[in-house]
Length: 589
Image (cartoon, rainbow, N blue to C red; front, side, top):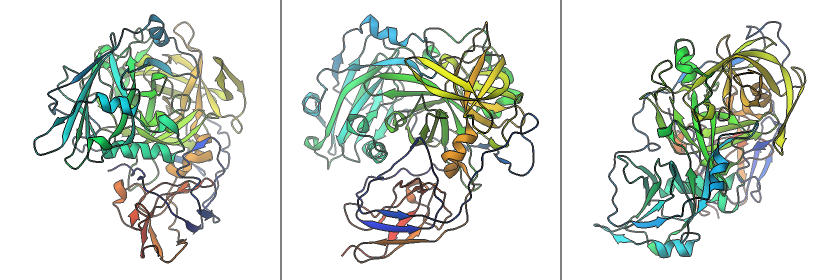
């Protein structure tokens, strides 16, 4: 199983497409990849079926019958090592330029004391400027290149930020050779992370295609290195000139905690939290779908949330769709910085010791949909999840009734995996926080956009944001955490964005059933004709075969630099998504 291919970084000419397809009216953010491409005309009609607002059900949980829409969990197979994880590869640099930062001001650490606010992600790090690397000219001047045997050049820089538990370096990349290699590690690490120039270019292309602009769109955040010193190596291939490299390293993110400290900010989770491993016999499948998240905002800092891997309704493939909260990740730049920690849980019930199965994975994600109305952040991981991870099952109709028993699985304060139990108290509408204020008001199952969930055992805390709420009946996910008022002295009520509302608004395009095959007519100005073969979910557009399409985000490409060939790219226009492969039979005249 391979993840869906990321869009490439080519240029589009003038084309026209006539497609019979359902039009979805959507709110919130939908990835607008190249929404404004000049000369692109898309017209849509046809029926793929609209989703009506679900009615109440008479009893808790999920009942069988007409209108049932649910998905069963799937398991990610073990496929060996991944480029998104650390490798036992020795560093190459013999000479490393050292950059020593001053100790942070006390006020900077005060930003990351773990207090947390409802509807606001838990901050665990703050960004710091790196003198001498603030722009391209300064960075290129500071790099000390070594010529390598067989050609090529290598330069290395180490940055120390006193008191840091971990560091990330933010690289602003405007030009880099696709075959360049970047390595990141701590001075005492046995393993290091490698990323190619092509992977960085692909990430930047996704940011730009989504509408991100400026420095944020061109920023690549390194993997989290658990040390007060981060070393970065840049290796250029023999055919690359050092003078053509255009990068800078203007900031690092100084993290005050790390996995070696169990992400305590500044303490472990509350004493009334329940170790999820004590429920592994009942909830072990769903536990394997949950990941602890770190992401970084340029110019701000690093944050903690929780997310859940979701299954879809295509029985043939599994795409790593990932659900969290909009108040955690609402921009492509933040999504591209995402790192996940899988199986981050205790070795046994109440051991308090991290188990040996934890997997730290880099690679980021592509933001597909974000909406404050349901506090939904829906992404596709750029790398396949580790073997043994579970794509969680979910249900969107019928709507759970008041009183339905529920279970939440999450990482409070970023701690080892915890579990909480409660029941649906009602349907509410919540507004995004303003000046730290959090406001929700009662509604009904038709109009409400959130579930109110009353806890009776265990609580949620900052860091739990974005975590999934599951029905006890069937263990299906129904929403993700916005926030609430729970504490050890008062379990209180938490609010979860409703998956069914987000599904009806947009997510059905990715998670919904595959429709019947459609016929596409592709034309463009000038001579030449084309045939579209849908290769949805095939890495690098490699599955060149006719396929059914989904209903959101139309995609096509015509190759590089105006030459017409085979390609793969996402384009969104008036809310339509289809991923397909365009093969031109003739070049432009």
